[in-house]
Image (tube, rainbow, N blue to C red; front, side, top):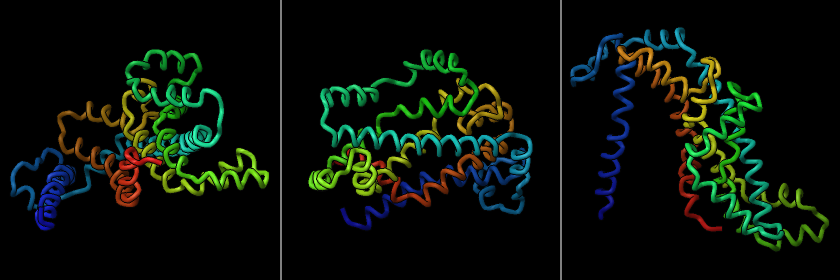
Length: 270
C-alpha cells in the first residue's frame, strides 16, 4: 500500500478518535441547557463561556478527587516499580530452588479476574482497618505481576559477564541490582511505571467499593457520583468529563514515546 494511502487512513482514524473530544469540549463551553447537535452549533462560538467549569469546581470535589488520584497513582507506581524490579532481579539473576515454579505462580495471577477476589479482599481490608483510606487502594495495587514479567524480560538481557565481574569485585546482590540491573533497564522501568500509573488512574471497581466518603474518592470513582447527581444537565456532565480528561491528555502528550514503548513491551523478549 502506498505511503499516501496509509497517511490518509491514519488521518481518518485520528479524526474519528478526536471527534468525541472536540464535541465534549464544545458542549462543556456552552451555556447550561445548550446542546451541540447541529453543524451551526459547532461553528457558533459567540456563546462560549467558562461558567460551567467554575460551577463544577466550586460545587463538587473534582479537584480533590484529581489530587487523590495523582497521589495514589504516584505512590502505587513508585512502590510497584521498586518491588517489581527486585522480584524481576531475583528471578532473572539469582539461582534458587523452585525459581521456575514460583515465577509461574506469580505470573498466573494475571489469569485471576479482579471480581473473583473482591469479597476476600474487602474482608481483609476491613479487618486491617484500611477501608476509606488511600492505603486501601495502594496496597492491592502492588500485587499486579505484569511489571515482574516485563522487567524480567529486560533483565534477562543484561550480560552475565557484568554480573560475574561485579561479583568478583565483591558486590553483593543488592549492589548488583542497584548498580548494574537498574541503570541498564532504566527505559523499561519508565515504561512499566507509566503502565502502572495508567492502571491506577483508570482503576474503578475496587476504589468504588473501598472508599465510602466523598472527599477520599479518586477521580474514576467520584466522577460517576457527580454524573448521577447531574443526569439532566449534559453541559455539566461534559464539563466534569473534560476536567477529568485534562491530566491524562497532558501525560500522554508529554510521555507519548514511553507509553507506546510500554504497550509494545509485552511482545519483547529479553
